[in-house]
Length: 261
Image (cartoon, rainbow, N blue to C red):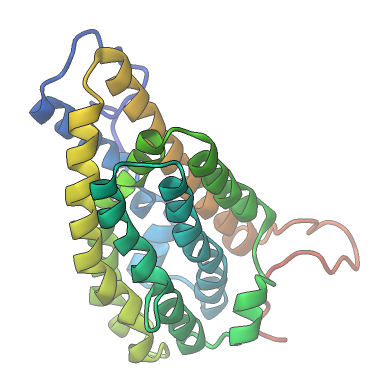
């Protein structure tokens, strides 16, 4: 994971002709070069360089995003997709909100890294930039046509790699994390692949003009921006030691975890 070179993922490159479904899929997948697996914060996490405080900060902030996923999916369903699409999409809500589902699995991860469950649920440590980014995603799903909101989920194309990376490296790099806390990553390996099959087929079929293909790339870029911005906030607060209001003496609104507390 080094410097990313511009290629087909360069949004400045004009799309001057209609792409075949194969070409269109390849263009969307090429945008994975901007997935947050390549962010410096994630690279440090993968390499085993993050401190306990940084891991806890990531888990706490990411939980705000996790709780937004079923809300986003419910918003998509509320915008009245066809029955067959609703039947498939409802699985995503169940995956996260059911007993033993993704939300509970993330709470287990929080406890495995040493966080208090109540602090996680209260979003005590969520950085403002993370909150703004996630809320923007929910509002997008509420306000845009359901097909546009649905295809914004296609960052799932890149998700299995990042989940597998954590399963492969965390036990060795962070042995202090209780292994039962990694259930979420294992769970999502199959769920994300299933969801991509539906979301990608829908996108390739429905975004079938030059303008719609451009729109799809812009939407996917928007989602990539959200995930990258969340990492930017963590990088600033934890690695650069510049959380919100860091320069205000006596300020207690930094939202940053301090393992010495």
